[in-house]
Structure formats: C-alpha cells, structure tokens
Image (cartoon, rainbow, N blue to C red):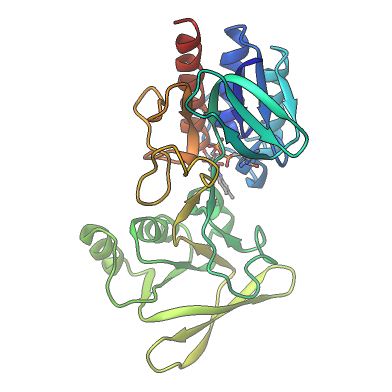
Length: 303
Ligand SMILES: Cc1cc2nc3c(=O)[nH]c(=O)nc-3n(C[C@H](O)[C@H](O)[C@H](O)COP(=O)(O)OP(=O)(O)OC[C@H]3O[C@@H](n4cnc5c(N)ncnc54)[C@H](O)[C@@H]3O)c2cc1C
C-alpha cells in the first residue's frame, strides 16, 4: 500500500516526489517514457531560478531525478492505463505490469503541444520546428521565421520573436483572430511582423534543418514558398488527461480543474503542472504545483 502514487515524472512529478519523500511518505512514481517529461526536449534552460549555468533540459531532469533519489522514492517505468475505485479511500492504479494500491494519487501527466499535421513537422522537430518561442526563439536571432496560429500565444510569440529575429510571418487560417485586440494591433504596427490570413501551412521543407514552408490560401488555393529557418507552431496544447477525464472535472479544453491547493473534485486526487488549468506552463510553475500537491496529499493522509 502506497501513501502517494505520482503519475508522470516531469518537473511537477519530480518536485512532488521530493516533497513526498521529505514527508516520509511511501511513494511510487510511474512514468511511461523518460524521467523529466518535456524538459527532455529543451535545449537549454535559462529561466529556472538558481540554475544559471543553463543546463540542457535533459541535464536538469537528471539533477531533479538524483534529488528525488536521495529520498528513496520508488520509480517504475510503466504507463498507467486505468484507475479503479477512484473515489474510495484506497485507490487502485493499474499498469500492464501490475496493480498498485494507494491512499492518494497526483496526476502530473503534463500536456502535449497540438500539431498541425503536415509533412516535415515531425522530421524537423527541434531542427527548425518548435512549439515554444520563449524556449527556442533565441536560436533564430537575425533569421527569418514564421508563427502559425491566431490566438494570444501566436501573437505573443510573434512579438517576442520580432525583438531579435530578422522577420516574422504570422500565418493564420482565418481572417479574424482569437487573440486580444491589443496584441493584434501591436503586431500590425511592428515593421518586422507580416500577417498572412486565410492561409495554412501545407508542407515544411529542408535538408537537415528547415529551409522553407509551403503555404496555401484557403480561398483561392494559391500556394507560395516562404523561406524561413524557424517555424513556431502555436495552435494550442492538449492536456494529457485522458486517464482522468472520466471522473475528475476538467475544463472545456480538457485541463484538470484544481483549487490552489491542487485538489481536484475527488478526495485524495490531486493534479499538478501542465495537465491542470494553470495560467503559465513552465518548469518553475510545474515544480511549484508539484510541491503544493504533495503537501496537500500529506496533510490529507495525516488527517
Ligand atoms: C521544446 C520545449 C521547450 C521548453 N522550454 C522551456 C524552458 O526553457 N523553460 C521552461 O520553464 N519551460 C519550458 N518548456 C515547458 C516545460 O517543459 C513544461 O511546462 C513542463 O515540463 C511541464 O511539466 P509537467 O511535469 O507538468 O509535465 P511534463 O513535463 O509534460 O511531464 C509529464 C510526464 O508524464 C508522463 N505521462 C503522461 N501520461 C502518463 C501515463 N499515463 N503514465 C505514466 N506516465 C505518463 C509523460 O511521459 C511525461 O514524462 C518547454 C517545453 C517544450 C516542449
């Protein structure tokens, strides 16, 4: 019988594990891939307080894992497939390899960036295709780039990139934007930003890195080639909440709803990091959520 089972070992799960370990809880972390979550896709982390030597995301993951290991946390490389008796005092977490009984569960399953589903998107991921301008934008200093999307994130990304990129073309499939008007007008006034509406990306080309994208007008189907070395895709994020959705309350976008103690609507079940309805999806906020979730779980167990 575990006190706490943490699903996912990104920064939220890892931080929860450290706090659970410090609280001497019998804790199991279940991770389907590599410890570290999305951090493993980050070339360089320059915004985590106190870590100014700018480690790669994979290095930071290793450091967090080593830190959690100091507290004898049990890690298993298994994907959680089902949770039984979710509202009982003893919950059962199931993977292909086994069933684990626990008093509490922390969902730290993260989120995945939504893809546009065109040729070259997967092939050039990390080689010109990015889903995070604040993370990867600096690598495109002085270069031509484009942003795909019409929401706040797409406009914020375009404005951010325009600070140091040679040019930014914002490509949006409609002729109206979901983004705040203030952001749209700022972008329109920026001489480095060119906005192309009613247009979609059809193909991303290159050799080892991105060299150009083929775009198509959705009204007249005219295609053109846009020479860019970076394409930033900002068409939304999907929460990895499929497992929780059937019983834990989620918002209209599928993110788990919590209060500020990371409680879900079910006693003994918590959510932390990108999978929940958090306002900022970064390593530092995920780690903070994990700490709060573990503390709430400890308080629940201790009555
Ligand atoms: C390319 C890129 C660059 C970034 N750069 C930065 C940056 O420089 N600075 C910054 O602060 N943030 C950055 N971010 C964002 C940051 O990485 C995320 O906000 C953070 O990792 C979220 O942490 P998390 O623990 O909530 O989720 P995640 O990191 O997504 O981890 C979730 C984990 O849960 C596991 N999981 C999911 N479902 C299951 C299941 N059913 N069973 C078992 N395991 C499961 C996943 O395999 C994953 O390992 C970047 C993101 C990306 C994609």
